[in-house]
Length: 515
Image 1 (cartoon, rainbow, N blue to C red):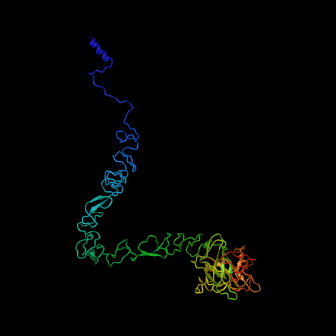
Image 2 (cartoon, rainbow, N blue to C red):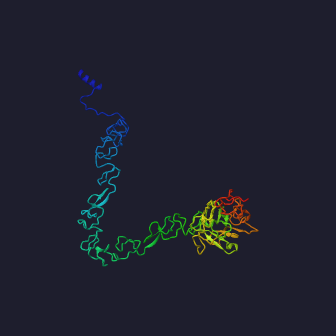
């Protein structure tokens, strides 16, 4: 009875029953896979779970000998010996794979650019090595594989003499150029065998044919189609500024070449606002190519006569050329070109018949700056005076002793002279020529008794600098002579013997004040 009780007591106190099966252990709640360094990779997959910079897929460093991406190789090691360290190589176990390697069609990223088999293209087996293939094709990547061609148009891939474009021979019955005709046969009946012409399938194409503009056909087999000498070729004009108007530089072609047009006559092919059909605007340019600049915007009094030297040498006639000049002044606030303007003596607007005129050369580029002057001279020959020590600067010369006057009296006009005793001078701009309204005029009269101008010959007449307007220069009371001497010899605009500089005039500069 005591033994039974003892066994019962042991069981009751929790002693394991050796006859019962063991119980399964259960892990504590909340415990899972360990990621000690917090890099998102568990201890079981991370090759160093104590360093967050080390995990599969990490970027290798060329400066670090540590295996950061857990591939068993440090970043600065070139395991495959291809010259690219693991940090740069996308597969450091394959020597054929590295940055800069040639891409081939192998389902790999050979050049480590992130793309696989990029640029694949179709190629055909070229058995005879003539550059043309045939038959089955395959894909190639990168450079053309040896023994392949990018064309499948070879009609005999076992003969290197046979390929598209090969020269036909008149003694060979073979179709060497793969055009379907034999070299010694005239398939199109134009009198030329295939070996002698460039297209034996077109009766209109042969060496004796006339080249015509027909969309790219080489009619006469000279190697070029629709050339400049083709029948129907047109003349085109170079258009650098793209305004639809060209210059004298031409090209003959069937179709308009790039940078050319069918209109010529552009006066400024560097300015797209200037062409024969342009609209004149106030921009110091000849927008409508009529040789006038801003003509629609020039107002009366914008440019005025400010100094006149009508008789350069004492005792000479009015045709004395050396030193005859006149000056104009720009009263406006903008630059004005005088190109193509007329200078007239006794114009019809005064009721007097035109005696003479000259027109400023439209290509002369005579500019009168705002608030500035321009000097127009009879000639540029001033060697006649031994006392001339002050050069006369001329912005434009209307006469030349070596030139004859033109029939129309335009440009280099030797007949135009400023008279000694009486004259009327007009400055005119406009398409109507000498009959247009004047921008300015000045009229002088001189006689020994009632001299309306202060001086006779030799002395320049200057408009007082305080009265520089078109209205004031009509009043001769605002004009004065630049010399106090009466019979002083030599050039009016400068006498080297003079010490007070009061008689040489001021061509191109501010006028002296009248006394």
